[in-house]
Image (cartoon, rainbow over all chains, first blue to last red; front, side, top):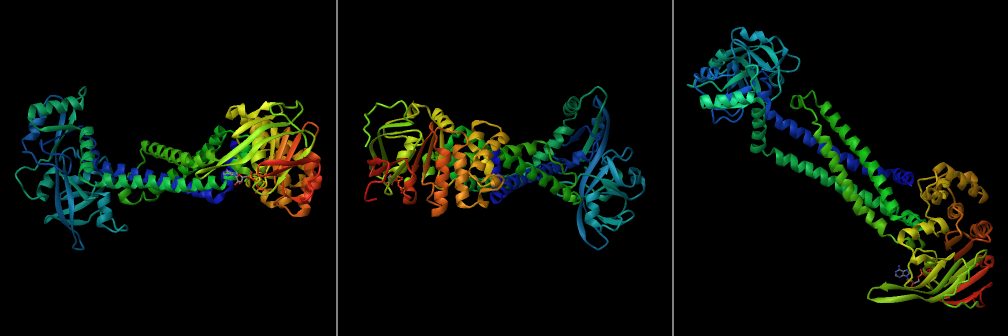
Length: 378
Length: 243
Ligand SMILES: Nc1ncnc2c1ncn2[C@@H]1O[C@H](COP(=O)(O)OP(=O)(O)OP(=O)(O)O)[C@@H](O)[C@H]1O
Ligand SMILES: [Mg+2]
């Protein structure tokens, strides 16, 4: 009987494709929007991810994220270094500056000062050039997003000069970095250089990056630093979460994406509900005949469930494949750099598909179950 | 006219109906469309139920074949009091014992003719291929064996009705009920369908009831029951005079 149910469904090509479209569209919308949402808010932690060596971030107690920080006095560095369990501690500066490009455009950039000696604070990988290029005078490394913002694709930025707050800077390398939430252009330079680039205020130590000694946990060391210095210390995980939370709390993004995901769900219910009801209504005579001949309501429910299951499986697969294709297709666009689909998201959209089909199936099947077998003689 | 006493069923009767009444709600009022029908349907006969539109023919056979509950009365089909069965038992009773032929055929458009004819066997749980083979034998007998792999819409109305006959008989039910089986057919295909139906559906151990007001086929009946306003007014081999 299930074979008959499936053939009834696939035999009605128009409604079958309508149902596949409804489920596929909902899946695509929900999966794709949630993927973009998650990847986007994770950008709030890009500053942390881009400095992979740091196990603990030390900062002023009022600082909140890599981009929302209040500088500490230079003495903080030594105070942190003297805490037990701190293997190394290096200065880290994050500031904004203005760049005048060759065409005369003015653009705001983030300047990141990394440790002069170890270059800790640079992203893990370089896209072009070696990290050591930073040892050259006036040298900066630009991140790959910045490259696409500042230069046409055919032009290599290596060797280009920039005017950075009236100081001369030469691009000598490109870092393979995760873009920030705002996709701001980032220029990495040595800490001592950075102090020249950004206008002098008294305190210019945004963070102290810390590596912990063997046998110590970042949590324990962070707690010890806080107790000993009165500064704020967060582990890598805590601080990246703080960056994500900051985006969630301070932008309309969760609401906006939430609305779209909800709409995807509603549209799915609407399309699938209508099409499914129409399909069953069109076949009500056949179902009535089956009931008269001797097919129980339980069997009818199974038949409809098989139809819903088939539509659900194919439609869901199409939607997920569509999302993957979308992310892949836009992979070259810097906005989507590093985008991935967390495994939880397809499960969530699968749950949504199941709910959509359960709701619409239950509504649609009522008419079939209510059909009197005697109606076939009318 | 045969006399039957209420509650007293002949053991050989295919259907024994006693005191059948049926009410329908029409807005505020209740309309009684059958008034205490008592009759027996015998196996080995082609029994017609005829009467004016609205006289209650469809209602009567629906009750006799277990798809419509009577308001009053009792129906025994081959000795089983069908309305004392549970819902599921009744459905399974129909699946095993009753074949249906509808005016609109009600074939499933997206499966081929053999599969349509095999539906009752498939519903009984027989593997599809085996059920189709059995159905093809019957389709051959109905002269549409060569259409077995076509879809219903590729067949003429008369051919589709023959598919429906095959579906009604494929599981060898003991009771076959047909409501206006020829109404959608032209005169000659209607007669051909009835000839075939007579040939395949009438057997010593099988009863066959046909509701019709198609006077072109009255001569094929073994017995004609006339209904008027929910009451039996004639029961015999021929139509009464004046019809
Ligand atoms: N489900 C129903 N609800 C309300 N009234 C009904 C219902 N089914 C039948 N009736 C009424 O019962 C009466 C008998 O109907 P029935 O269908 O049995 O007549 P019929 O003899 O088969 O007529 P026809 O030759 O037109 O098919 C009609 O007046 C009809 O309107
Ligand atoms: Mg009728």
